[in-house]
Length: 348
Image 1 (cartoon, helix red, strand yellow):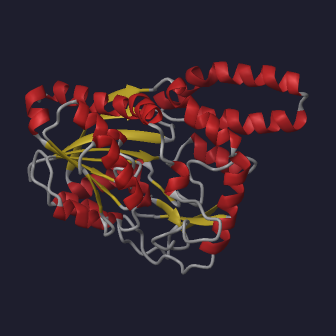
Image 2 (tube, one colour):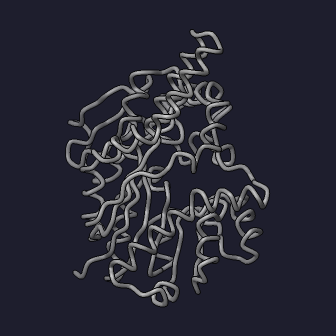
Image 3 (tube, helix red, strand yellow):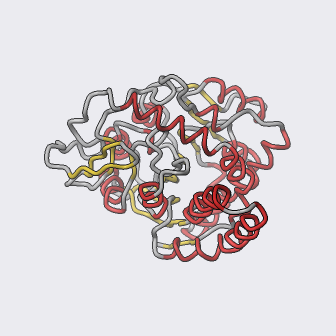
């Protein structure tokens, strides 16, 4: 297995600056959503391994209780969210709040800064593994949770012959197809497991989607039925330094385990458990995160509240200069908030 570490923080500076500007309103929305989640029934079984949770450890994170499964060590909220949570709560967050429609220039910028590096990493990894460019272009690709179509645009630009995306939100499908100038994004409102069963592909991709799947055991068992040689590229948030910061300090909006959009987290153990279910071998991992960015954000809030503007500005610039150096150390010890994984289905 190969490892790649870190990524320049400048690539997401636009999105992160935008988050900082609305930090308080997001934080308030997260706490409001939690009040509604606490009214839902308790989980009885682990969403990944289906083990009963009667003996699971329980911990509190930002006023919401979580189970740590004692078999697979997956982290999940004690209360079972509805399929639409948190968008079905008053003032709740939705994915369109996170991914508003962009101008063509903004779309291309986000594609090149955030999604093109993902595709380049997958391409480089597959070439190192022994595939040719022609073989990669001839394979069928399916992105699960394709959003506004940024990754699909990368596939189109590389002349992939057959590519499609499945997305729950029809508005996002419409945005994607307008930019792609073709019908490549398709509405899909049933389970992710049914998507794999109904849309066979040579390569599946899913970027920051699995943390929203409440029946993960069904999804990974569906992948288990895929043919040997099937490739799966995905990214997920992990239990990390950011999680600890969110537990220790409640002055900033959560981003990792935020109790709203994210009410479960993979650990090293639960990630390995999931891939073992599916029968996939990891080829490459790319570890990078925004943990130190979160640290800077929570410290900046305190600087703004307690220091004169001039002094706060100087300190914030110092923190900004530390971002990439400190994050690289976090990434190297596998303590970052996200993980990109490339794996392949092994022969039975």
